[in-house]
Figure (cartoon, rainbow, N blue to C red):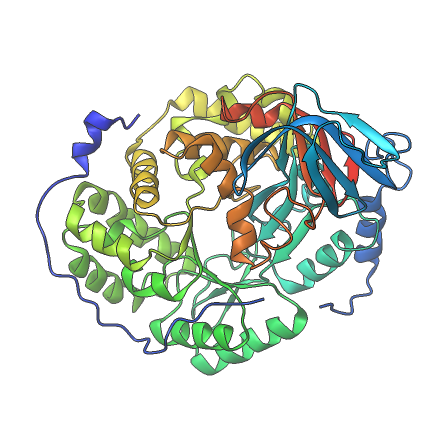
Length: 502
């Protein structure tokens, strides 16, 4: 575990001038804020499944599905208003109509006793892949809601799979989280997630002309943002950014291996996994970059996955060991307005393995049998092998803390269902890791409520508990500000104004 006394590992002196030459000359502008005609049997099936019309496990308690509802005598907690004790929250359908002192009249037809309980906004998982594992796809919406996740951001899936899913999740009456989606990973001439040995969720965008055409097509099909991946060339990256900004589409990204984080970061709205930032925090950052450019020429005609793995294996840990504080401070400063989604649950898995937690088996019991058995075998193998090297895990926690201290916005995402990530459950593990990295419990909640809403410019209707906002709420039996793990002590989930039984 990386503690304060050990941070000297990363705080070594030495400074190398950083090249800021860059292919982009366009200014970065704020983004702003579909319906696609899809009529397939898959969409119909999913719509019926998600609506769960006659499934009592998904039905609201008798009489609470319609009309004005009041949660009385509750402590309300959110990142905008802080802590408000002895409140009554009233919602009518999918709208909060009042947050008032307890004891005032409500005209509510249904009343929920919130005495001794805590009400927080519905949570987001800001990095999911709904179509990554088809064994999990049908059950993911219900699993998310059962753990209080009322909104998700899907960061990569082919459109022919995503469109029916999104259509079903957004259908009237569907019991499912709100969903925001990017469509496929926009990758380079070679594609990492090309379907060979791993799911196919990426596509090749080899030229600037194709980049602009692809972004336009995705926009016309209704995506909420785009996702740029690691094998993208500088010229294609510039074209993707330019076109997305013209269409007011937020831009999510891994740092392309052809660029440095300080070059690419200022032009995108979020970066996932802290990926490739370590190379721009090294004393020899420019040397590492030049080495990557030579490897990217790909004389051996490697696949996208092989090429990326080679560079990560070659440079990641040496870069961490060659950390330079001043160099990294410049890199962080360049990305001051770019949201980081560190996915510490993934990056730092061996610091807090989920399968060693007391509630892991119960959470795992909710997933389909085939997945449960496979993940149980993986967990047993990892326990037998031991924890392994924790350098990158510790680095990820360390860098998240440094970025947080510098004021970089943080979003909470998990990469569900990759690497033993149980849908819904894993978001709570991410909150724990964010607190471990230095965020306060309230700041961790902000990363899973307000920050995602701000990313999509919907904070006027999501992200806090205020009159006029949408009725996505989670009622807890214990105070999450005393222990962030209390976000798992869920009494009731309310999605789009409907209480959903767990």
